[in-house]
Length: 208
Image 1 (cartoon, rainbow, N blue to C red):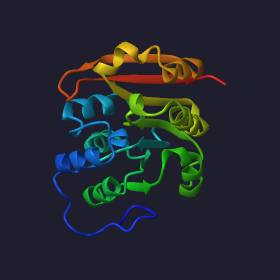
Image 2: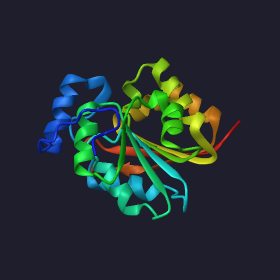
Image 3: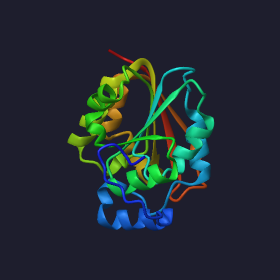
Image 4: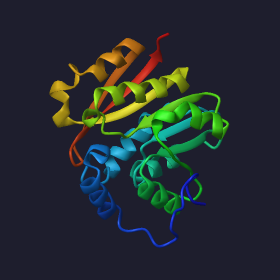
């Protein structure tokens, strides 16, 4: 099944790292990484998810599916899973690789509309693998607003940043927005077995 709204080709997908590298060269501000997330980072992300027994988990920006595979391995049978990917090549490759996953080719900016179209009334968890530190401030705010508009009051927002961005992270406008809207923001340990090393942030207790 091709991604919704796409015309995916049925040829065999290229190697994951070559796909990421090619897309990075073409769209460096969208991709933000030269290689796929490591198994260590993927496992740490999946383990950090507070899985609902029945509800919806959305992965924003799944790319080639390195983290998606670990999320699916941890997902309870009663939970629904939806992947939202803006890059057509990634979306098509992911759907070929994991045909059981609902892959939506769309901008996360339209998340409320996506959820309405897919029959999702409320989202329990958003796992975002986006290059937040590279995004313009206006887009950061718009994407976060789209997430907050769909996230349950008891929901969870998970994302990671690379260690080189950490020194300025706490001074960023995005970090300030998170502190304004979430009562709990936990920073995980550095995942050194990733290129570059990454840190996971776990945001909960959404404020009105």
